[in-house]
Image (cartoon, rainbow, N blue to C red; front, top):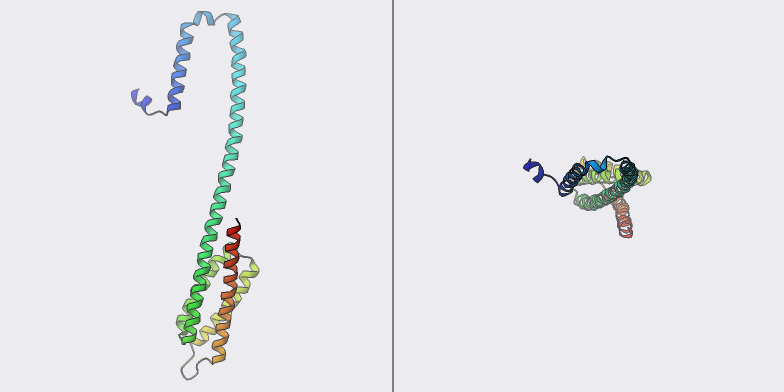
Amino acid sequence: MLYLVTGMSNSRKVYVVVCLVIAIGLGQSYDSLISTEWIDKFAVWCGGATLVALAVAVGEIFHAGRTNKKIADSIASTTMDLVTHSSAAHLIESISLLDDTSNSVLRGEYLEALRSLQVARRFWVKVSRRVLTLKQTDDVSALFTKAEKKVSAGAFSTLAAPLSPQQVLEISATIVKIKNIIERIERSGEKNHAAT
């Protein structure tokens, strides 16, 4: 019995004390409580208390609904902030990998350039699925495909038949186009985030 009392919350302890006081009070004044006049008054007060309890319960239901909506909105906002920050990190990493790709192309290290370009594309895909329009995604994906094909051609070129300077410039120009689009998207994301 002692364990039950010590393990209860304070509000439940108050409920137990109130119930005991009511039970003891009813037991002490039993004879005066069984009169008809008192029973009628008691019934009116009980009905009133029931209506008050009903109003409180309905109010609590509406309050709980509003609270749940606020919590859901807060979670959605926080989730979108996390997606935005994660996407910005992926965009920055893509830009860095594109710089590596460009440097590798200029040094004639096409396998390394191809690897960096493919990783940059993976980061791009992660971002594009989350927060970008289909048009933006298609434009950049087409440029990635074009750059990958050209870099792959360089990876399979030989010393006897290397890529021409014109082909190297075309690869670099494509990489710069991709970088410019990603940088523009990244900057617009910073402005949108700063505005909120």
